[in-house]
Length: 293
Image 1 (cartoon, helix red, strand yellow):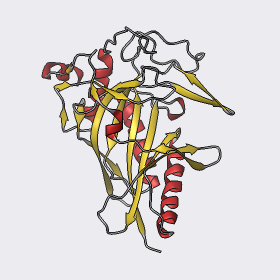
Image 2 (cartoon, helix red, strand yellow):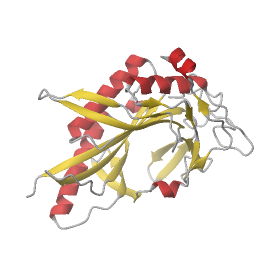
Image 3 (cartoon, rainbow, N blue to C red):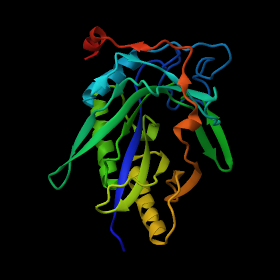
Image 4 (cartoon, rainbow, N blue to C red):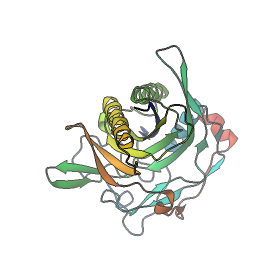
């Protein structure tokens, strides 16, 4: 059998511990509260409402960017509308950042057990609002909008991780940093730190980036490790059998320890990004940056 090398990149969604949501005055932390009780016309996307940006969310995101040694914290960044239809997204779009994010670049160096250091690059760090939560009850899927509008930082790594263990170690280190900075409790079981994993394989010694799959809905660091390892083994079996890896979005079923296909993976064009017309750009000038840092 040909020896294969996993190529792994992580997209982490970090819930910021602000008092209110990113675009309205609703309480940001509603963990354990009855469904659909911590909502308002803004975070449920009712017609005619206007978002107002939470200053504290910007400051916490900028602090994280500096801690991740971002190459640049942008003095001018913009919000965009990311269009897609899903039951837990009441507006039919998510307010996020796209071509002009809050920060670019950065890295996290992880000491490895063999004495080496794994350099994990950060391609982009941006602010966005969270969607609601889908709750599975047997054959029913129920929607809780309490989480809609909670401020998130999405941080995307390069394809720099080489095993399921390295991916787990990255999340452990990131969680430690977030708690030390005081910007997130980063509890994965409460959804305060979430992770999507992009996984592909290639023959050892190759420099090609092959077709990747995306694993979603993973709720613990150990589950991330198991889901990635399961997908690596599946891809090796597929390639060795002469099959082609398809760009699927996969869902991890933690109870049964299996991956299931959710849908074909979207491309950026599918989201039809355009500038958010209801929000002004973020002007993070030098004086404000010095105040934050």
